[in-house]
Length: 276
Ligand SMILES: NC(=O)c1ccc[n+]([C@@H]2O[C@H](COP(=O)([O-])OP(=O)(O)OC[C@H]3O[C@@H](n4cnc5c(N)ncnc54)[C@H](OP(=O)(O)O)[C@@H]3O)[C@@H](O)[C@H]2O)c1
Image (cartoon, rainbow, N blue to C red; front, side, top):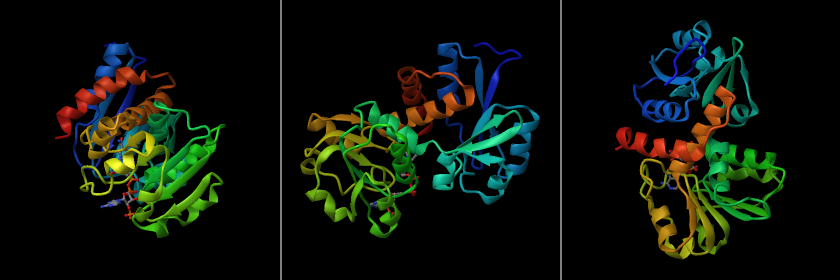
């Protein structure tokens, strides 16, 4: 690994200690010869962390635990629209002393879907209405080629109201709608998988779609992904999303292209060590 005066440092700022990322990004830099290092900085107080990023000229940081921290938000100088849309800061970039905040969830999920298919003229069904979905819809709206239709359903349908502002969102509703839907791509962007037991997705539902995309990253073979495999569907997993989120972070901070295949290999081996 090259470490010299030009080495770009990416920090993991975190409130609760976890080495996640350390054994993903550094092995990636090593394998690809990128002159960068990923380091952990733990402190529940955001002030010294943010001051450190500026004073030590660190290139950028992921902001785990500080995403919605009001004190942290005040220390960030400006926000990309990706961050403004979800009111969350997923990572920051140090642009000649000014810190700019971003959120990578929606683009990470969109790139994960696009690793299997273009969304142009496709019928998408998205389950969920949280940060990932809010951000995903905004990222879709930035694409030149629009899907034919997007249907968004959620356990709490009240949370879907403003999604109808997007022209491509043709329908919204509760989870009971799912059994009546079909399309090209089915996206799970909820806690259903590992954090919450999945009692929603069945073979009958999965079989009505061509491509399945999941966000569950704690294990790659979620119930949904196992069903996708069983029914011979194309699929992208939560670990693909994790990979593409990482790609968005690294490409933005380091201003260089990242190879998703190599990064995914390190996501798989790195996560297996820290996510049990
Ligand atoms: N693979 C990755 O790299 C990656 C990155 C980011 C996030 N994620 C995962 O993506 C998921 C969504 O993240 P987020 O930030 O959007 O979360 P969020 O804002 O908290 O939204 C959670 C969503 O899950 C739904 N949900 C939770 N429990 C449910 C249940 N028991 N049954 C049905 N729906 C349920 C919620 O429905 P209600 O609105 O009804 O509560 C809501 O739509 C999380 O599980 C997170 O771990 C993965």
